[in-house]
Image 1 (cartoon, rainbow, N blue to C red):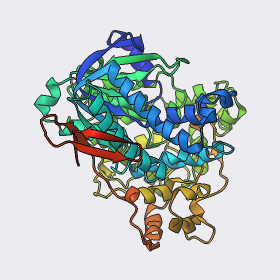
Image 2: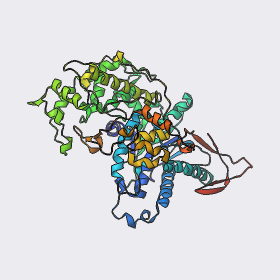
Image 3: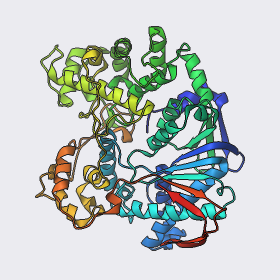
Image 4: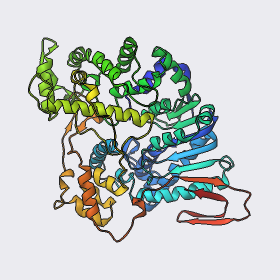
Length: 555
């Protein structure tokens, strides 16, 4: 998801670096092409299985409506790969094609995935397809991986445009979100080669703008679909190298401008922290932040992926000075749905003015953080420390790589900006201990509702029933808080926070006879064609046979 309205912000200010085109009317070559492919998989599944934004009333009369479940699954895999091939006709890679599927995520993202999958479970009712199978560790994704091993070999054997490529595939058994696995690979390229090479990343998520900026590559393109095109034939291509150059100019030419832009953008939105309330209806949030940044005139980071905490604190203090006015403006907004009315705020408005003290007390009471009135005591203080710590974590995640797989923010709501400003940033612990990622089955136990336990092998089902010591983490019903929001997807699912160590302990108590390959931590696989070899191998899979296969794969 990333920063809301970030694409609009960029396109409004830097239109000359963005091109909109219809599929088939534009093509370009790059050295490296990267495909963050989970969105492709979800979109294809919606078309084949008839749910989500591609649901059709006359589905039974479409080619998909006549298929068996097994045929639909295979067709999903085929169309997913076909979409990838089509993308390589728009932006043609000449050296490397990197395809990534999401693996096990850091704990901070697991919290968000848990919300999404619990909400998806209720929407899946009455459909033939459970979208939660699009998760690491499921049979669906394990079979998709095997299909990809076949499809990549076949394409490299038959498609002249692919025969000289190095094709890298990062399956769901390799830990990390797809886009961040790609960033780790980009960072591994020698800097001189990286900077003189041309790159393109594909993906619809807003955070790819931040990620491509974080590479600091001068020749980097971003390809994305026009999300508002009902025919799905229009694309945008963004020249992120030039956009980064112009952003630097917009931010007083600071040497750390791009990294600082990434950091302050996370206040407006990110996938790991709830948004500070003052930013929920702030249309020009990034403009406000950049204005404050320019007036401050201090770098917020050091150019090496580290936050300068004193300067960051000064920045937060200045932003907090806008909070009262913004809350008072929010109180005047007419929302389209009564669920979105911010009653907590309105109860503390008098003649258009907010009583920040009484509002803060009510806000933190709702957030289940209680403190003596008027003093920043332990509850809110810990909340603020956790928020600042996680902001630093997110920044490091985008600029250097994942600092720890086990850190997350253990609250439903963000602190008020005023209280963040009152926090002593130098007292916040920003050292992160190395922690290994979860296994795919451990993540499934963390994110799936109990009714989806069939996605795990049967020995683990008992962990998601009433007699289980972790059954409390699998409620059948839960509230969603829409107060102060503008869109339904912004609602906060009030699920119990998962206790990951407790889940892992229970997982370890389950003794299984089998070692499940889909539960192992896998490796990236690199495919290369060798026409010089005299050895012709036959490659056989459940999805087809390649009789003269000259494609070598290494892990």
